[in-house]
Length: 393
Ligand SMILES: Cc1cc2nc3c(=O)[nH]c(=O)nc-3n(C[C@H](O)[C@H](O)[C@H](O)COP(=O)(O)OP(=O)(O)OC[C@H]3O[C@@H](n4cnc5c(N)ncnc54)[C@H](O)[C@@H]3O)c2cc1C
Image (cartoon, rainbow, N blue to C red; front, top):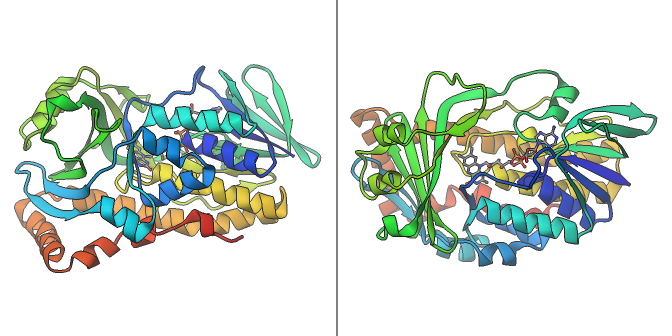
């Protein structure tokens, strides 16, 4: 049975590994001429690293990642701590898998190598443009003129998925009302920055800092609310002056980090309400093509990793069939929808706009961290405690 995967991002490559391992013939079609990711970091929470373990790549990813000691929230302008979770310890004792910070390009490289090793073919520089049904199978058309016959088409082609559009019709993703600045800085611009994932909260904006490449680089994300996003493209080079206007007066070391920006990118953030259906007639979706979410829970890639393993389990158990695809959706949709809702809610929590709402939100959080630390830590159990390896189909 042959499966064509549209898209060679994190989701498409994880699916290529998982599906090759259970015996499917896989061809990944990627529109870019090389497997690339933006120059930015990625948080891999314990549920994501359990997925990477299932794919057989965790050791390689851990070897080039950084391990945060804590997950923290601070007030952006003062640096005052709201809470701090000792995540390195919690990850091993509570969740049984590490919390990692990885450079996206490193992850993509490892996934691509593993996919090829598992037997998948990767076709670069070709875009999936449409599909047609041909009796019990499918024919997938590429913009190069090639036609690929297959038994299943998997759309892992991101938030503006062509496969989703043909399956469910034209519907633009929802602009979340925020843009994200992303940049990497050498670690020596902020030697005192703790080895932590820190959310710096502020009115109408927040920043996230953490280290990648075993501490050698600092990843900075600055999210800013904005009424409209005029640009046609959804990622473009950002102006360092604008970035400095937004975060230049925040607590140290944020001004030093952003002052070192030789290159930064600004992305408009989009999501979608849960789709009415994920599959139709031997075509299905995964990752951002299926459930794009704002990054305020750091779970978009984690969900794509989990999807890939559950999909492989369903297809292995039942073969390529409607019931296998329905089972996949049934196992994944409630979780991805809940994570989406939680990510959307976090934007409000991080962006409290005045002293009163900040005190009303962050005061109790601070108190709870001091008085009931185990309660504060348990609030992420439903996300981090999930082990895709234990999912039975
Ligand atoms: C600022 C920011 C921070 C984030 N931080 C985190 C985090 O810390 N942790 C986390 O888990 N998630 C995070 N995410 C979310 C995560 O990046 C995404 O959820 C994840 O990359 C989705 O992977 P994907 O493979 O589904 O889609 P994509 O990464 O979008 O990949 C889709 C691929 O398909 C290709 N493609 C598109 N159309 C076609 C076509 N027609 N034919 C062929 N190829 C096509 C594209 O070129 C691309 O390579 C963050 C997102 C943002 C914006």
